[in-house]
Length: 185
Image 1 (cartoon, rainbow, N blue to C red):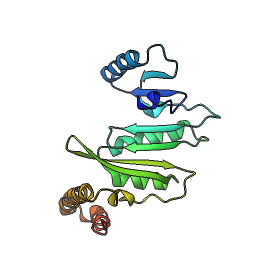
Image 2 (cartoon, rainbow, N blue to C red):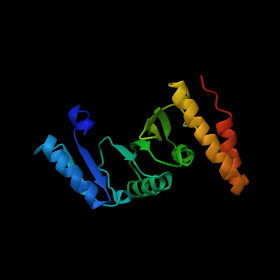
Image 3 (cartoon, helix red, strand yellow):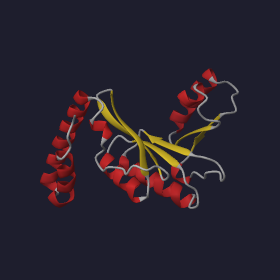
Image 4 (spheres, helix red, strand yellow):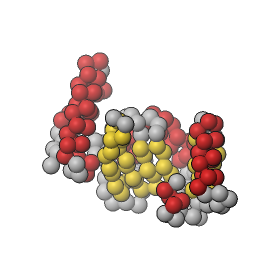
């Protein structure tokens, strides 16, 4: 809704696969932006989204796990093979996997942030194929903005991946090593 308040986009499409979420969202949008043609709400599988040609697109995928993020991105890129679009990812899990996936698709970093809300950390990753900075698998600037937050988040990741290594050393040791190499300033 902030995009609408700030007039930051000419058109905002909201989508979720859960009807109760889209119903509630539509009620709120009608309350604050009645009969505003700049927004629409759909209830469908985001993987099936078709993007209009000859337009600029920013796809924001938030509040989902990293595996679901990758599934949706695979669908969108398959359904729109000749279109380039920017992405904002704010997943609840598997940020290492999401970052690796985006980098493998040719995305570069525009910006990244780390936030904590309701005792849960979120990495916000803004990426584009036309950007210049490579996407780090563990992030870079997120470790430099808020030292206390970064230290807490790093400790959480080190603990998580230290436990994962015990079950599958070959898969998780490179990830753990990457987090161990982070320097917080």
